[in-house]
Image 1 (cartoon, rainbow, N blue to C red):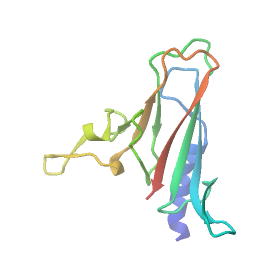
Image 2: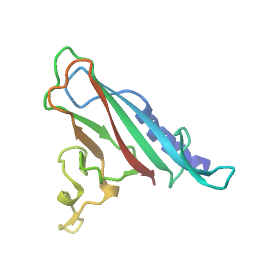
Image 3: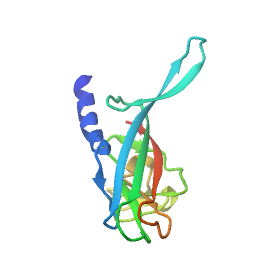
Image 4: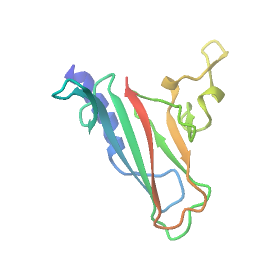
Length: 157
């Protein structure tokens, strides 16, 4: 079981390290990831807590938070924050402000707009397990020094 968890931890460590934005220079991105755990308090009631995601197992519910900041000297215009999904992570694509890609970031849209080729030459609708990247458009004209947060839910497969 421990051997199966190691590749997952290695794949997820890329989320905890600041990565370059697929956007205009001057955008700083930092990502935090938490595991949502359900515990029982002393009175027997269920409580949801966020714990460090240093150990994840299949079925864990993850909360991923992307912090962005305009560290440049000019306002950001028509920019997007794009994040690849680590292998083994499946997101909930229901956020209307988020676009997804199922082909490595070449094409973007909502899940109901995306199709994939089948081995026999046909096509099929994309499903959440096919998502490779997520993208959010930043507000227009983000002044230097301004920052924001984006988040999504995911499940460890």
